[in-house]
Length: 144
Image 1 (cartoon, rainbow, N blue to C red):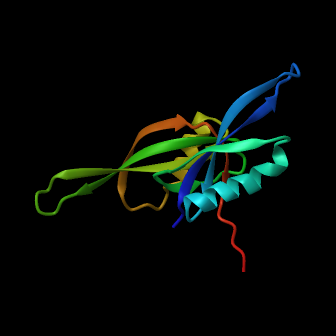
Image 2 (image 1 turned 180 degrees about the horizontal axis):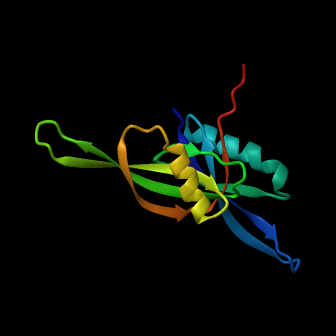
């Protein structure tokens, strides 16, 4: 099971007018610990940033799963409520889960989510879909 950490990096970004502006960008990293997440984001972003940058925050997320769509350039967070029935009381119980979806727009995020949920036996309802500020998502690197 993946452990997703949100990492924020802060650096001077060159604007179109030539001025440098301090920006903070968020990324998602699959890592085993906070230390590994910081090391991974530093390793992944070093080739893309000229000059110095710092990792300003690392925090664990509650993302349960990611639905990938290589055609997408944005990340959407889908809050979904899985519906179960308590056998003793016959009461309906909802348990929320967060699923990250890679998509090109809101409709594509919805369609990708529905496609990813095909074959799921559980009843569910979408609570909300929001675009995230994530610039990129880095999977675990497997080395043998």
